[in-house]
Length: 163
Image (cartoon, rainbow, N blue to C red; front, side, top):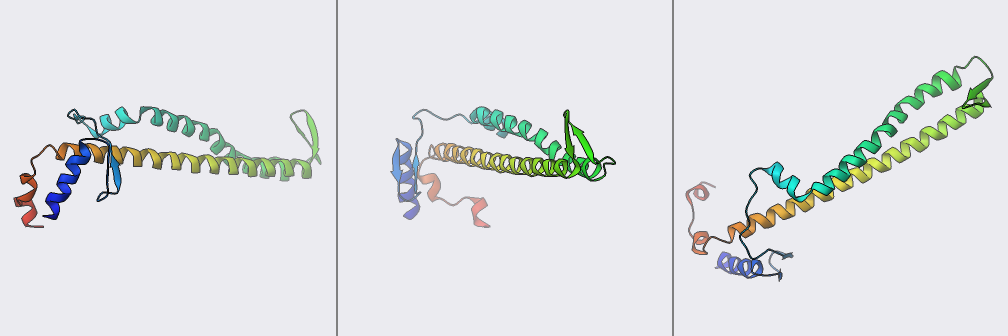
């Protein structure tokens, strides 16, 4: 009885953009039959091409910052602390060792902060994209499932007997 009522609510929700309280979501399906993609990769690429390109661009932006965070400590040790002269020439500017060390330390701090923020944003964007794709995939599966008659869900199937 409960399953039949839920199936009827789902079928009425699939018919249009209707709020379904039992599912706590809005279902927005087209009226025509939904054709599934041949592979999961094709589904992901079809529905998130733009987001994937943005993720790729942000990833490529983070690589120079990662390289900077790896190179700056080496420069701090070798060039600022281990310099033989009390004055260091950097980009045609004469700095003392302490000034050069301070500048490199602040540059390292800025690189680490910017790289960390970009990585956080990248992970957030990946999570949002994955959740949207999962939701779309779930709605597609539900809409395909609702094409079966209601009596199909009332009878137990052999795979469900063992569970």
